[in-house]
Length: 443
Image (cartoon, rainbow, N blue to C red; front, side, top):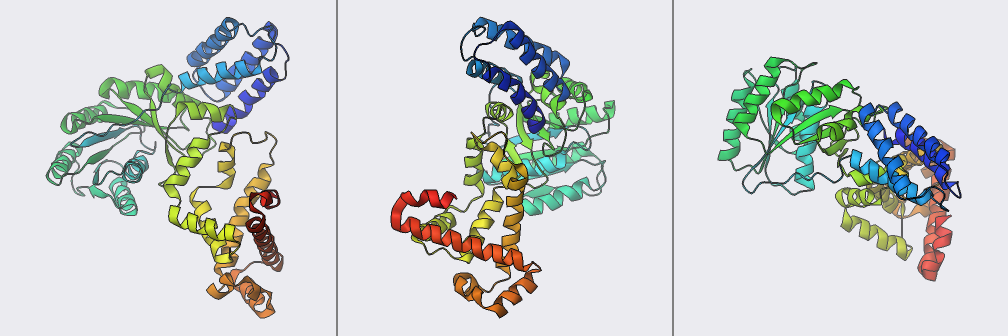
């Protein structure tokens, strides 16, 4: 959705930026293009109409029509309205002093079980919660309990389950007893879903709510869902009084507008977004940052937070010192690449950087991801002695052994060696000349 909607809205906003002054017919043309972009992204029609109405009123109220250089004011108006649609402010899940209980709800296949584990991992890593328990209360979907058990082992979180018990209410009751007796700080309940809503499912969820008394009830919505997801969320909200939502599968080609419409229509804030299959592909949702990304203004705060979460600070500082001293070797390069990989794909990160050119060649960016993999394979095929002393790589027999062992080509091997030598040369120049050598490094 971010890419799909972003490209179209940014194109409309360029028209405002290219005008020295804005006429009423220009405003109509820009808002018409924004309207089409939102509708194509599957945003609900009611929201789209209100959004366009607000933009027109704000633009006329700000008296930007006829004024010189109206582009920036128009961007601000659209940005402010986007933030409103997306919820206005970040939804923070507050932790209770004794025990926080979170109940997950949604249709089958929306990603509830995976989101349960991602949420548990989020609170362990980023909120430093000590004891987390996940309760496997989906007794209908085959292997749902097994999936949660496997995910629990991956993130080192306890899972309460009862294999031969088909009574979800009793499982939750017993799980809550365990949480109380063993002093768990956080309990997350994975509940059952259906392909469509039925009375039996909703009554089961109402019963679980009464037993667990959750402080948060999170609706998990698949970004691939169409407009019907709004009616589904409305029904869940009527029975359970939802507190927030998680939008999953944002890494897919889905346009996602329907799932995002839930926030504005039902006043249910988005708490988190799922951006991939891995456990760490899960982020706190910030409406202002998302609006900035849609308008092509980047999201540097998310980059910083991601770096703080995944990068080993001590190791990074050590590599930095060696880099600046000119003693950087291939083992340092391998460690650097490993640190970079933890941040995610370079092609995704670059979209978060403010001020990036609109016409950037993404094929070259994606090529950088491939190059990182290539260099990892080649360096991993070297001995530690060769990594620490790259001069040894000039030896033909060593070169042939590394190429054969890595399964890469002579050209790829030479590319690594040549680029490493260039980097080492630049770093030595910088260590001698100070920051004045930065221009050479950036080449």
